[in-house]
Image (cartoon, rainbow, N blue to C red):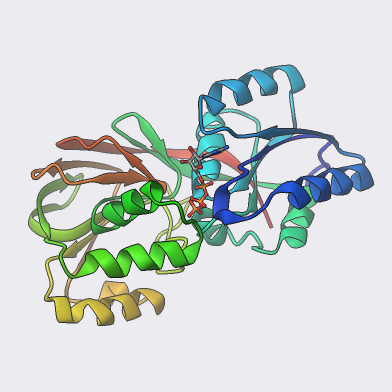
Length: 294
Ligand SMILES: Nc1ncnc2c1ncn2[C@@H]1O[C@H](COP(=O)(O)OP(=O)(O)OP(=O)(O)O)[C@@H](O)[C@H]1O
């Protein structure tokens, strides 16, 4: 256990998970008062938040910056702390909260606050996808389409994600990719190609059962073309963390990968849609992010 934190900046996303954050803010202030922690709160606007948070950190010099939101908020805060000495804290308050689950951070608000005050810091790997940082899971293909639909919709929360998934599944056509890693090669159609630093999506579906966030490698998980009728079984295998035993699953463990997105399919990085490109270069930055963990 390390020294207790004296000063924390909390970055609260007011819309994440469709949850009201007024009580959250009051509870955080009460917790910090009780623990003798100097606390500064920044509420995201969705516009140029990164610059404002960086300015705030330069002034406050906090012991950690805590993302209070979902994976998008964790990515916003985490990416600005890569290769810095300030750790990322996470209070899961999103629709999925994928990275926090992979880091075993409690989903319960009070318990997550306790983890912060214990201030145990670990180092995890991060990825660079065409210079864009990724902490968790990014992909090209079906899931990126669902992430796009989710981000365009008015509803948040896990139900909205599941609704989009059901609506898009039947009509989705696999796309063509060419993938080279330091050891492996694939060319063909895939339902989705996941670039994985971790294991599971925020929905609890495990796409990469063997992934470790701190092993210095990442996985390219290719879900190849499959008959529509196999979908239920594939989903079941993901929820059983058994997808690697599917005949449609190919996993490449690597330190470097080039993905040719031959049909310019949609891309999402850590739960946020990004502009599509026809070539992705992926590399790993080992132990590049400090994170507060249980
Ligand atoms: N004040 C705000 N108003 C509107 N959008 C915002 C605001 N603050 C942040 N955002 C947007 O919120 C999104 C990030 O939400 P976040 O990922 O944290 O929650 P979520 O999508 O509900 O959960 P998860 O990613 O875990 O599924 C970003 O697209 C960001 O631009």
